Image 1 (cartoon, rainbow, N blue to C red):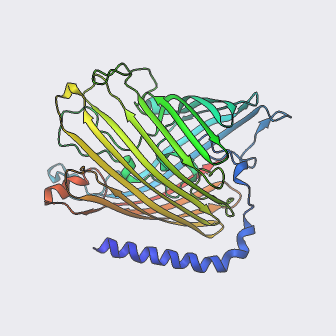
Image 2 (image 1 turned 180 degrees about the vertical axis):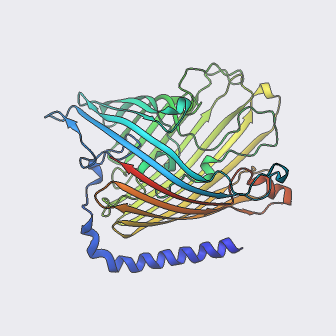
Image 3 (image 1 turned 30 degrees about the vertical axis):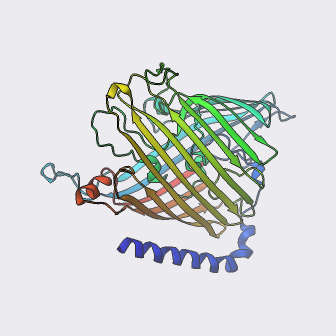
Length: 420
């Protein structure tokens, strides 16, 4: 297929460019002042908190720290959709959801108190409803190995979501995590997706022997758009209708910074292996009970970043739906980034999604390429990406047409990001 040949050529070109650039630009590495990853506090999930980003108020003994921050992302988007699902009688266009957008306009503050508490509160002025409150949490440390976090924060599932927001290789998450699945029923009130993102809850977490990390907790399971207590007890399983989640990681070379590329971290040697699972229990809603599991790998090696994930979701309708069918979905991605120059990073990603479930043949394959430029002494990052949606292995043309409904066949995006 044409897009596969294009992607193969692009990958070969990128890797050959990377090999050439390593020899040609090594002397330029000092153009960006390097830092130790341990000095970058990425716990707030938005930007790394370093002393040269804006300003920080701190007590003499370091027990109290107050750091205000700002994070802005503006994008220019072009999306082209196939004819399937478009009604030309209503003048529906193949080009839609294009133009300019501002996904994030975050104002917040983070810091420490009493030498034992970390905190973070931020609002996203570009959002609406409950999403305006992006995060609000406190984290109490009994020790490095035993910590408690309460509030609204990221659920422990998938490296792509857990990466610090301003530190991603691509300006948009893998489609396999953000697009909802296809169900052959129209009765369900909620169409699930594999990604979980932000939610309200409580977790226990820690880092043991500088190698082993764990996160275990309970969340509402309603996502970031809901800030209220709306849950009850499951009619089916007779336990609280919450999201039960956990994640275990092995980081053999010390704590892996949650970044997919930072020009100040070009001499790191870190690695992460992770396993995670969660079960979202519904109650009286016309919905589904969803089990998810995932495996992840990430590595930083000098100018290289490598990441890969695979995830699985099993759903079953609540008894109220009176549907005995169950469905299984899976997906994953692999991506690689390389700094061809201390200010320029190239990236490639292959994204895979069995969106119509394992009971039907066919899947989506979604190659993408990106380039990131970090403007010196400004904290400005410019990212550009292109992604193509391919469809492979379907039994019928109807299955092929339905599998990518609502997803643009071609996506081009340019993002400008500013943070301090």
